[in-house]
Structures are given as C-alpha cells and as structure tokens.
Length: 159
Image (tube, rainbow, N blue to C red; front, side, top):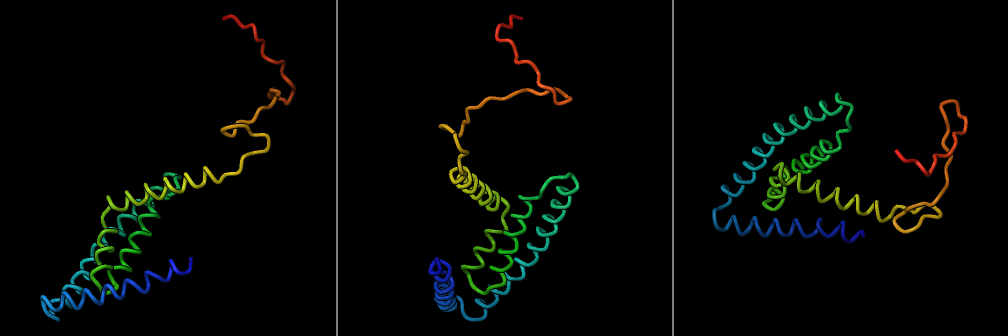
C-alpha cells in the first residue's frame, strides 16, 4: 500500500522533467516557462470563479437543510485542481484543468458514489437470523396510541 502512495511521487516528477526538456527543445526555454506560468495564472482565475460558485451552492444546500455532500466533493476537486495547477509541469497542469471541468467532476462523483455504495452494501453485516437478501422472519404485535395491544387483523376480510 505504501508503494502505491510513493510511486506517483517518484514517477510524476520524472515525467515532468522529460516533458520540460522535450517541450523546451521544441519551443525554447522562455516560451516553455511562459506556458507553465500562464496555466498557473489561468487556473488560479478559473479556480477563484468556480470556488466561489461552489461556496454559494454549499450555502444554499445548508439553508435548505440538506447536507452539501456533492458540493464538498466539488470543493475537494477544486482544491486538488489548484494544487495541480500550482505545481509546475504539463502533466499536473493537465490534471488540474480536467478537475476544473464540471462534467469531469460529475463523472468522478458518480463513479465514486457507485463504488462506495457497492462496497458498503456488500460489506454490511447481515443481522442474525437473516435469510437470503437480508430478510428476517419474525412476529410482531401492533400497539395502540396508549401502548395497549391491538387485536390481530382478521384474515377473512372481504371488502
């Protein structure tokens, strides 16, 4: 598990350095640096605009008494986008720009929720005595408003 976390930290900088060298060799040093700075500035401006929009939607959700789960996810994506855009490099800039696109964020949240629900559903412990599908066979007694036991419903109802 630790290798999975460390591997991107080792591979991404190597890829970025190779891309810097290749792009710098084609367009030159100063245009390459200008492109990196331009993506950082453009990303910062887009992030500010979209971040304020997400905050407004979050506030509206809270005012309606609804948990702003989707808005928090969008905010997290925007935070990651800002981190990627402020990190010099073409790969990280590309990831940052992708996370700024609302359709990409909606795809991500859909996939994440589907996986989360599936994982929770399959990992949920079954109650004792549960049959297939988690159905529990049991008996019950209906109680009236004052807690008194009500007579069982008649089976021969013909209405």
